[in-house]
Structure formats: structure tokens, C-alpha cells
Length: 335
Image (cartoon, rainbow, N blue to C red; front, side):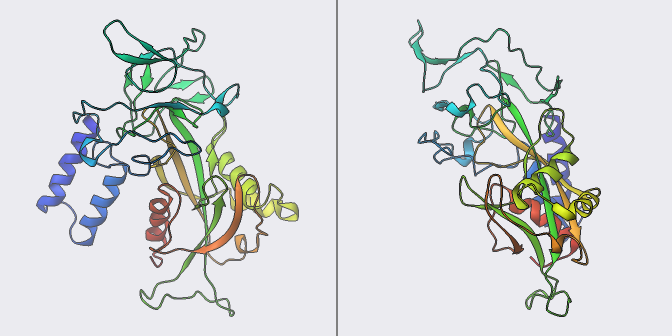
């Protein structure tokens, strides 16, 4: 609540003209709206069928996204993918009962249908803190626990449970945004005819699960440093985990990058109880002499991999376009 109030005060100041002006006002409002709970309304995880299932989300209109907004008819189905069973990277069930429609239903004495999960007394997660090697801290801030479950700080999604996400609460990922300038045959940057700015290219993968193009990122393993995840995911998804003779150059290239985003991701896998968060880091090859020579070939979860021209018309998975736009702004490239 305090974060939202501070954001609202800043928004009011900007709107009143006491903050930045012109284009800066629009950029400030747009940036803040992406990351502030109670202001940004996620859309990729509402009003659709949940990924890799036939479970349809309970409708959530724009005026009912935030938990502070009354929605007395809200009855989201419960869904957890069978793929989570017995996986070491997945949490156990949290023992609880809450009013939903779905599986394992029993009728309470008051006539209310509730969904009950198995009570795993051995599973006692430490919410909002480092739980052994599992990071349950959200970049957004302290999240609420309701009915023994974490509550998505960005609001309703139309579905309960974890879906296909392994962790209750925040699921941490890392996204390496690897870029270079698009060059002509003479090795000079190509300018876009409309904007007059250099055209940026990013290394993109086509996801096997949905067919959408995306940043080649992945989940941070328990106890793993984000820097290690960034390098590992890039190698797994764009070089089939084999840098060969270029291993030394790859290691040096990923030794330094610029963090461009840390926070919530509007991901289609999000639920009321589990959601994606990421740390996105830009690794830019200014001359094209290093990363531009990487032999790209899809591996792991990628169907295809290629250098993609970056622009407003490019549609990427989840909120990856917002992340890439930050790189574009930082490098003053064409959009």
C-alpha cells in the first residue's frame, strides 16, 4: 500500500507539472505503470485458457483486477499441472481450503463449495524471505498471505493454484537480452529510413511451448547466482550448450552487462497464487565482433533461434517487448 501511495503522489506531481515535462512525462507514466502494483493491470494472464491445459480462467474485467476492488462473484477454478508431481524444482501443496471451483471438492456445513489440498505438515515455507536456497522474496515488495497462500500483488488472474509454475509466490527467472547493431556489407550500422536511428538486433528464440518469439531466458535454480543463470540459459537455448572454441570469449562477454529490469512479468502462466518475476540484463556487442560471430543453433526449450530486428511491430512473449524497449531507449536505437 505504501508503494502504491508513493507512486500515486509522484504521478499526481507529474500530471500537475511539477515533475518532468513533455515526452519525459509520458515515459515516466508508462514506465511506472508497468511495475507498480495497484496501477499496472496485467493482461496476458487474464480472460484466456491457461497454457498447456483446457482450463479457462474465470473472467476478470479491467475494473476488477486489483484486490482492493470488490468482486463478490469471483470464483476462479483451481489448477495445478500434473507435471509438478514429484519434481525437485516444485514446491509441495500448501494445506488449505478456499472457496473455488475445481478439483478435490467437498461441501462444507454452510453449503459453500470449497477446494481442499492435501495438508503437507512437513512443508512450511518461509514467505517473503530466503527459504533455505529457495528465494521467496519478491522484487515488488512484501506480498500478502491469504488462506495460507501468497497473493499475486498485481491482482486477480482468474485461476488459483500454481498452474505449471513450480513455486508458490514469486518464481524467479533471468533474461539475457543480447544485442548488436544491424550492419551493411561494409560493416557500417544501418539507419532506419523513418527514424534515422540505428537498427538494433536481438538474439531471439521461438518457444516450443507456444510458438512465440522471446528473450532466451529461464528459471534461476535454488542457490544459483543470477549471473550464472544468464550465461547458462543463453548457452542452452541459442548454442545448444556448446560454445566450443569460443568458450573463453563467451565467458568474457557475459562477465559484464547492464541490468535493465527487475520485477514482475505479465506472463500467461501467472495465477492468483504464483507469478513470474525476472532480472533482465543487456549484453551489447557494440562492434559486432564478438557476439555477432556466435554460431547460433536452437537447443533446450527453443524451436528456432535467430537475430531479430527490433521495432515497435515486433511481438514477443509475455512482457518481453517492454523489457526490450528499455534496451532500445538506453542505446537510442530505432523503435
